[in-house]
Image (cartoon, rainbow, N blue to C red; front, side, top):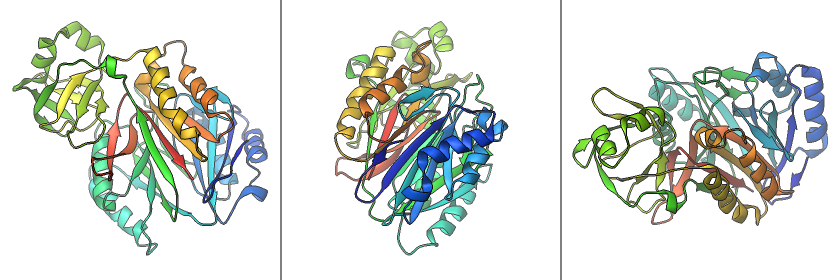
Length: 389
């Protein structure tokens, strides 16, 4: 366990591989965190774990033993304390005398927008002060995309920065992926933690190397949210075939062929995964595909994953603060049998700085526009970092 001696927030981390014995897991986490001597006036726990920690009751036992709210999501690999593993549970504690925290779980079903509006309004009424940041955990479900949830929360909060992840797991259909709130796990609920006060935070992303993005740029001419319908006046499928992607490649490569979207507003381009093709030639993507944005095709491999992670993280750890990082499940799949290589890169670069790393079903991270104002975005093929101080 290492401590981040930063001005407004201190951070402590712990990790356990004890998946069956709740009493032993609680003892290991409490011994590492030492809450009786390390906690300040206000604290928040951020957790991530292999989904079986929920089934065995270990997750709930650990959250029940911690004297503060906990938020988070399941994953397939996590890292903290110079350890990385699939069968692990990691905790990052933020504690402060100057900053405070409030948490909420929001059901996300057909009326998700109304639920978000009501829940966020209730949360904001708890304080005259606006939160500086929301740590955000979304469910991975077919009926509502992460971008749809992000847009609804962005409207409800008035654009307060959101950082976080979408739950993921080790299953082919992600059927055990769940969000976490105070030891409870949810298949269909978004979990938010509001951070109030003079918190210092820096957000950064890394996605694809420039040399892995094709020079051909196209214009999105028709879309509906995350459904890419038209490119350069053609159907999405016709355009992709026109630039050399075969039907076989599109069928077998879904989820690992990045589409790079430039909103042309001064923010960094964002990568999008293609999850399915419709019979009428549209592409179901992992985030919003706005009309008039430019579109390019990218490629990603193991070397690219490790290089982009290193280049983005190094500047962040040069300054004091705890680093929270979430990397897209597509990057994990690219690693093949070397499935802890990216986590190992985080461990090597972070050194003695407090950090927590986990894989993600979609990354939530704000980016500055041309004027420097942070705008909330949902990402794929990306590793997202937040340094908190």
